[in-house]
Amino acid sequence: MSRIPKLLAFVFAFALFTVPALAQETEERVVDEVVAQVNDGVITLSKIRREIKMIVDSRIEQGRSRDEAQREVEEKQGELIANLINEELLVQRAKELGMEREIEAAVNARFLELMRSNNLTTLDSLYTEMRNSGVDPDMIREEWRKQVTREQVIRQEVQLREYWRPTSRELQDYFNKNKEKFTKPETVTLSEIFLSFAGRTEASVREKAADLVAQLRNGADFVKMVAENSDRQGSAQNNGRVDTFVVTDLDPKIANAIKDLKAGQYSEPIDMDQVGVTILRIDERTAASSESHFDENAIRLAIMNERYPEAIKKFMSSLREDSYIKINDSYRPLVAPILYEEERRGRSGN
Image 1 (cartoon, rainbow, N blue to C red):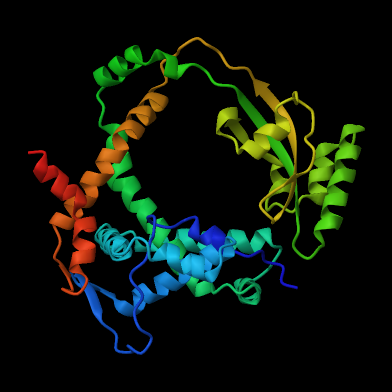
Image 2: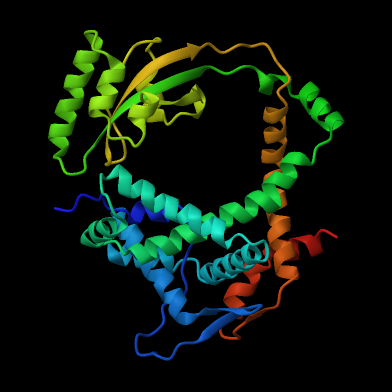
């Protein structure tokens, strides 16, 4: 039995945009076709078909029937091509900014983390396990590269600019008008022992986790238990420490597991998305405060988040306006109204 959990649903959680589908083409049509030209790049019919297949497969992975999945992706024709054009613009912008090496390093880091979390020693062994699970590593790499590209470009071109845009006066004015947003939240500092399902039955891992919790609650040395049992890379070196978190930002599953625990206490074993079980120790818990305080980073983030939706629309619109985009006449009626929706709104508002 393969040790790698099914990854398709995980990969498609990272989709660049909400991805619908194009009207189905007849299988007899074997000659490829340029659906859209984007500066020096092209969107081909074969690429669109691959995207449709991946979307349908991912929805089947989520429990839908093939007919239902196919019907869902056919409900919003044209958006797939529009999204692929936007994606191509972001890829081209990343090249202009010289981000290719940084992007590839980030993608490689994801594969290495997946390899380590499954107790594998080489990337070749990871790729073998992925294929045995019915997952194509090249497909995963392509999807991750698209996601990282979008993240990196938007972070540099939109988020960082909006973060640093407010002046000192604007920051103070925003704080004065929104003091209730800047009270001190409840925080918790966590350490963990992580047990991977890789190479073991889930029942045996859960049984071991329950035994470890019992030992810890009876006074066993946590640091020693981390060194002897945790499968998380680097746990022995940092004594299992994870980080300090705002409680309201935690995954609800984790927040519920630790909600009644005090510093020094241990959670029950928590299943972590089919990859293993974690045992959490509460290192420190700080109560929330109703007193407002000026936190420049928090204020900048709040302003950035408010401005982000409009800023990203303007950024993508500017990329399109500065580019040569030619859509095949057969597809233009499906794509153009979606692709240029923001531009049309801008003109109608003038």
